[in-house]
Image (cartoon, rainbow, N blue to C red; front, side, top):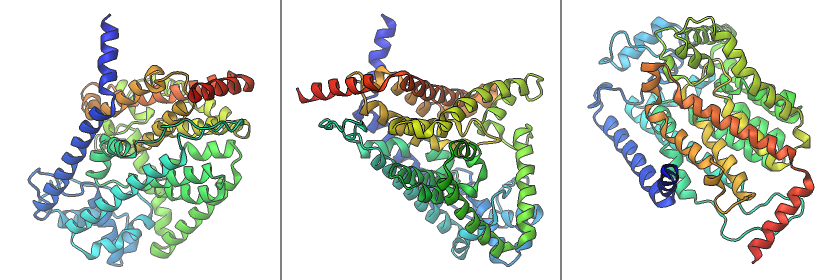
Length: 454
């Protein structure tokens, strides 16, 4: 009885008017906060006590180093810290933001150092929001709800279309984007945009162009740590070729900017940062990372002999399942391929060396793709709620607001556990789809078409 009442209460809150109210309020609050931070900034000191752009200051300083012609010192920690405190003199003397990205990232934002820091932050906020919003729309346009994706080419149902305005509000109000990525001055919107473009080209059977788009993620190689081996296992050679082209172009840009020695030094910096994040270094806020490695370290207090066995057990099973599914890529239908792509995006933050919560915005695309597949092939009038997906996505939407504080105090990574739940759900849908004979799918689609026509 209580459970039924709870279900009715939650379902009543998972309706467009209420969702629009909550998400719209969060978007407005984030805009007001951004404006207040920029307008009250005085040499980096604001009314909230935090500098404008937060982590963006690290990228800005790196671009300053290149602009000054001191390219050989791009990864010089002492120079970086000195310029950082010259830019933000009111920051704590111990504060430091390491630059651990490839040289071409700093070179790409170099024009922003020709304007004041506050204006540069405002420009980046506008670019970041635009990339993210456009990417959401691209994903929605790539998986139309009116396409049954069936071999029988049955007529589409009436009234099935995306509520783009509501979905944009929900995506923009997602805490990992609104506060961790956008207000936090991170570059996650670039990866989000890159993956969205790649997915759109995949849907249009243009794998080479998809690879070129996906190659933009080389600005942060850990984002591709799961995707690359899956593409290899799936023998997606044209996509890999496209990624290689982009990778060579970006490497060439880095060579032009800073030369060979600095690029080699970047690899040392990247490996050093990985050790600090995965090793429980107190200088790194490991509770802001969602990967299984850091999550287990928090749960097991960083020094348990159970860490490696549990990491292998929790990682090998999804990795093995994804590998087997990617090996069968050519034998999957369109929706199964989409679901596999969504599952890979969900597991990417988890099966990683280190993965910040701000980069986990990729789960937004995963959620949209999964929801579209359920709506396009419904087995009930409310496929999202009756399948449990709506409840799971609602929990994922809410968890980031408290998960970091909870992880910091208790070591329990609620958000990561929910991502594991979504990834497992998606893998389960793939298993179920593989067990249904093709004739059964045709019969179900015929029945659905008959019901719609009536």
